[in-house]
Image 1 (tube, rainbow, N blue to C red):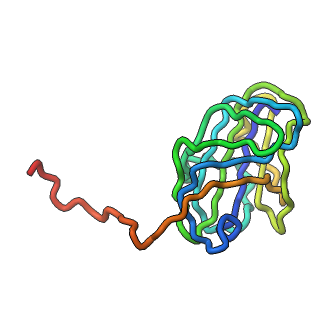
Image 2 (image 1 turned 30 degrees about the horizontal axis):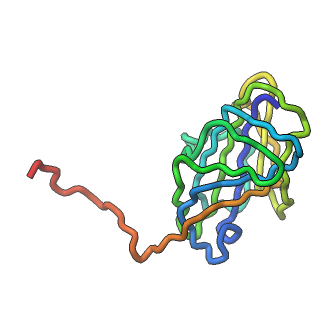
Image 3 (image 1 turned 60 degrees about the vertical axis):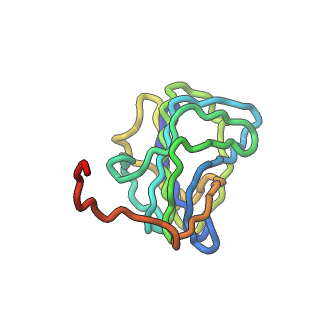
Length: 174
């Protein structure tokens, strides 16, 4: 289709047996078609969640939902793993699941054979919606147990040395 959106959920124990989280710097999709293709006007957002499945079928604006834009641009697809270096690495907290929002606004039709490998999950871990007329933000999506195969590059975190800014008590020039 010319336009579409999808959400996929990857559980913490699927990303790391220890559910350790970490800094995600790269994502790869397993492209299933033998002919290479480039899709422009793509956007990818990440959000840390506690949810273990996807049940809402309505479009969710990623920014309004609290997701972070981690990459946008053109994706070059070729048979096998198509890697994306995130322009904004994402820190996934320990024990949290990763919800990916993908928006496809290419505007041209490449053909129905341009597909990705997937694995069937035990419950709904993905949803998708597509349209040829315009971006389907007003349309409901289709829940599915068929989730795209993905590979994540995660730098482990060490919480014993992490810092958090609690407050600024005295913002003066001195």
